[in-house]
Image (cartoon, rainbow, N blue to C red; front, side, top):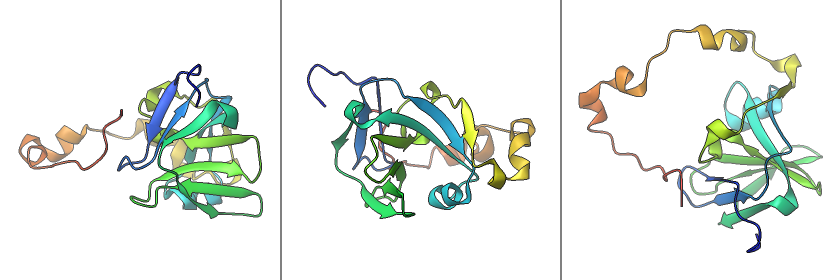
Length: 154
């Protein structure tokens, strides 16, 4: 990242060993339901923000990588295991998992892929009963928990 390019979006892994910055808005933000993304994230779907590599930089550390197919590499933190990225081998863009942004509310998906593997219950999750973490654990238990997660900023 050069001095003339200021970060637009930043983020990193759970432990803070790997951090990144976007110097432009993402090309697209999407959700992928394919089975490979489910396995790579351990979640029912993955959400990615795509950016041209010239507008992206690893600002602390470098992720380890796994060649998940003949065309793609997936990056993750070797220290805490956080899944971080997806990219086509030798492609001009990188995709970062949206949960890794310091402000994930600013990267809103506009399309979905891999719908052949979408789990049937995903469409109804917004209607499930919900509660905050505080409501789930209660104030007494919350007072005993110490987070080891890196804060959402440098």
